[in-house]
Amino acid sequence: MVNNPLSFEQFTSCDDVTPALKHALADCWIEVTNTGGAAGFPFPPIDHSHAGPAVDQIVGALEPDTSRLLTATIHGKLVGWLNVRRDPFALIAHWGTLHHVQTRPTVRGRGFGNALMNEVRRIARDEMGLEQLHLAARAGVGLEDFYGRLGWKEIGRWPRALRLAADDDRDEILMILDPL
Image (cartoon, rainbow, N blue to C red; front, side):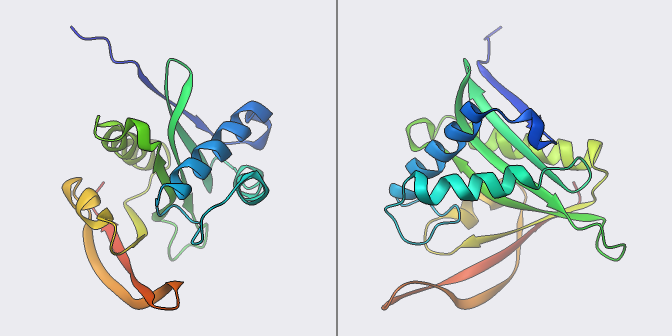
């Protein structure tokens, strides 16, 4: 039997997120963004002056029923993370959205992104009671293929919704995972 060094931890309160973890989240986000990743910052390069306040905002909104942070670590080192949210409004409280899905470029291709997505699926279904997950992904970087291999379906696009440069407009791809 092979020992899998990947472990997950979820956070549902800002009080549980240490300054060291916030720093690691920002470091990961900076690394992902500055190597071309599509995780929420459109214009690299970024540094802690950009990522730090964004991490603080995510952490500050953590609450068990509406916003959770999921981290993936190997031997205590952060290798990926995401934020799963739900709106408590009764008409849409049965589905949630994923935000800032990312893994460090140095660990890609080893199945950690797949494992992170499978774990959030389990949490959404079994712990949050969600029936569907939604996400929006930037076209042109292969994300729709990654998510498609995990059972996600494209349900629409916002054409040219993301302007990365004067001559580089990208579609925003809307995807769903249903059932969980």
